[in-house]
Amino acid sequence: AQSVTQPDIHITVSEGASLELRCNYSYGATPYLFWYVQSPGQGLQLLLKYFSGDTLVQGIKGFEAEFKRSQSSFNLRKPSVHWSDAAEYFCAVDPYGGATNKLIFGTGTLLAVQP
Amino acid sequence: DGGITQSPKYLFRKEGQNVTLSCEQNLNHDAMYWYRQDPGQGLRLIYYSQIVNDFQKGDIAEGYSVSREKKESFPLTVTSAQKNPTAFYLCATRGSGGYKNIQYFGAGTRLSVL
Image 1 (cartoon, chains in turn green, orange):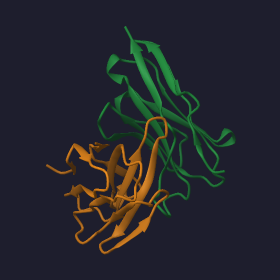
Image 2 (cartoon, helix red, strand yellow):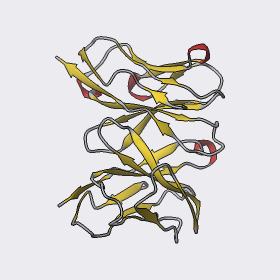
Image 3 (cartoon, chains in turn orange, green):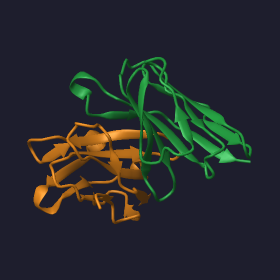
C-alpha cells in the first residue's frame, strides 16, 4: 500500500547535538516532498519542500533535508538542536507532483530536547 | 493581517448534536482542505475544495459535511453520524502562483465529546 513512514515515534536529543529525522515513502513516481513542524496545540508550519532539482534543500530555522530517490527517503537534519526545536515533525508527500494537491502525512516524530 | 482563522479554538459536542467548525481565510487562495488529527495517526483528509461551490470527499468523509459558498470560507459540520468525533481539526489552504503546491495551515480546533 502507498504510504509515508516515519519510523521514529519519539526522539530525545541533547541541546547542541545533531538531529536526523527519517522519512520514507512508497510512491513510485517522483512526488513532491514536505516537512512540517507542529508546536503543541498549534497548526503546522512548513519547514522545507522538495519539488525537483538539487536534492539537498534548505529550510527555515537551520533545517535541511536530502531527497534520495534510490532509497525513497527524505530525511530531515539539523547540525545543532536548540531547546526551541522541541515539537512534533511531520513528513508529507504529494504523490502526483502537484496534479491533485492532496498530501499524505506520516504519523509524526515527537522531538524532545534535553539541556 | 493575512492568514487562516479557525474558530472556536475549543468545542464541545453533546451526543446526537451537530457542530460546525469555522475556517476563514483572507489569502485569496482557491483551494481549501479539512484534516483530522489523532494522536499517533498523523493528519487524515476529510474534505477539500478547489473552487467555490465545489468540493470532494477525502479519505474519511463519513459523518462530516462541508459547504463552499464563498472563496473565503469553508465550514466543516461534524454530524451526529460521526461516532468518534474527538480530535484536533485543521483547516488548510493551497497557495497560488509560485506557491501553488504548498499548503498553509490554521491553528486548529479541538473538539471533545461531553
